[in-house]
Length: 542
Image 1 (cartoon, rainbow, N blue to C red):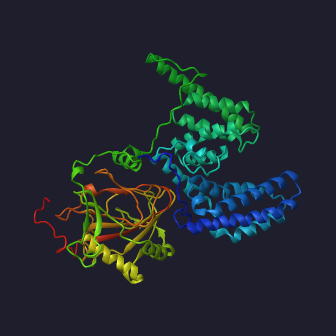
Image 2: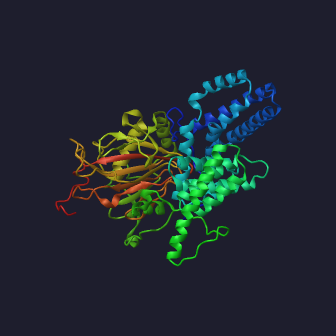
Image 3: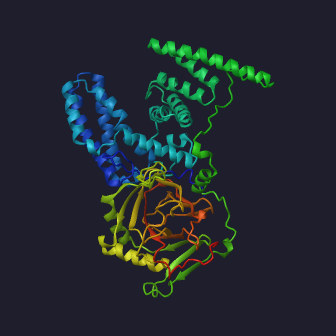
């Protein structure tokens, strides 16, 4: 099943640290701030001498107030939409700069700055804005969503997002271009141009600026003829800046030279020279390096629901009730087990954690959430990474009786000893949250693999603490297994062969969240202590 049209996502912002991965409460605060700013701006409007500026400020105040009222009725649903998240961050960043220019009185500007200073730690900033864009582009790539579906709201069946303006599209394209991502830049700049033509007299941005970026983006992606047309269109608008006119004239001469060279090559190859008035579709090749690897392509395909590697032993897969060697915890209430793969062993346990227990775990973890880190293989230090976008915290058995109860349950159902296991790691994946392909076990040549009294990670247990309407699957890229995040269930798999070596088939990933918020709780079980429950093999080849 594909989720191309089921795109919406839970958005969360950690304003203090400029990260986009926290709880809903933080984003809610931004919505309340917008409501307060609306009141402030409404009181400013009559004090502005310039009539046009006064009307514009009054209109902005009205829009802020309306948006806040609509969003706070059902903030979860509102914030589940990536376009709404993007719009909110844009209003607090680029649009806020423009708004301040309308406050012509120094006294009003000072008063507004004082108000913003009060809310500074809870307002989205520029880093939050670019983080939302990065997440949106990540979703666009993974789930193959054309920009138009974001623009017109058809990406979501709920259809509760406003139509994006040319300015909205331009900011995304500009950001991508400025960081060297010409692929996304061209895509969104073209969408900005299309939106501009539909806006009629209510243009949301300067077309000269849009065409200026579009010229370079089109040419950089191998479209000099299209770039020439955009350059001519720009000059036809008679830009008042003489330096801009001179630069574009130089660009046009350069493009003519580039096209002449291309025409010469086409003639030598006996190929037809395209008409400048009837150009072929613009080309735009994805150039992201990691996208060229088969593993990354498999990862994205599995996230989209494509079946890549049929299980040859699918006919042997079963569901059963397990009392795990008649463990006292499971005699009267055996575990419900679904086998997804035999080697490596990958199981799902259904209905293993209650709503009350989930509430306690999330309540304990939320105040402790920090950006998730990974081990840098070069330095051995824990660092943040773009391939793991989430926030996490750690809970110990002594933190709460329910945490201790869950540990006992994991031990019983997984038939594992937890004496050397790690604490419970609680993870929240928000807007575009993901964890790209990785292993849970350490590499054999890593000096930290066999820590004294602990050993490598033999198994992984993962509670799913929330339903995720779309996206957020756990996928195994080497065997094609996809595990849906179902609230109350838990995934369990063995990371090592019986000889103690890492199993390469356990490479797995967490797909970007498309709709809702993904909460999981991981327990990593280590080798030491499993001698009786899961003894190693005497055959080094097993």
